[in-house]
Image (cartoon, rainbow, N blue to C red; front, side, top):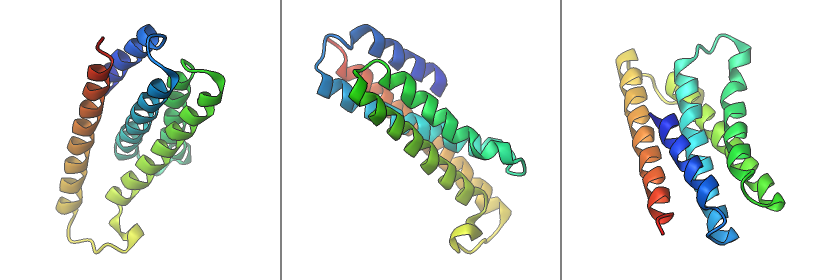
Amino acid sequence: MNLIELGFVYRIFKKKHLIFDDRFIKTMCMAITMVSSFVFAIYLELLLPSIERIFYLLPILTGLFVGWKFSAIMKAPATLNGIYNGVMGGIMGTMLGAVLKNPALCNIPIVSDTLIKTNMYYIAIFTAFLHALISHFIRYSFKV
């Protein structure tokens, strides 16, 4: 669902980026890039097994791709900004997902496996809501 929403926002960016000034587009790009790469990194970290080493870089590379696609719409100096926000969102999502899977990484006492799974569900639902809310605000702000 979040991929479909991200596709809609990207299509709006492509269609209407010339109507608005660069600062507005840059702010919107930073918001959607950071949140979407954060959410996708959490999803990938929670869904993929942590045994394979190749899966460690996948959320970060996903954030890099999202940042690159959105920042390619803007002018050249802003491209680095979008890529940076995408990678940072991917790194933060990876860290939060790792801590959700194993709370002992941050010296959080583990009560039970049921509590860990419940926290995973709550964070996944919250991030889906956060992504939908940010996407809605961005689509609303592009209405002319």
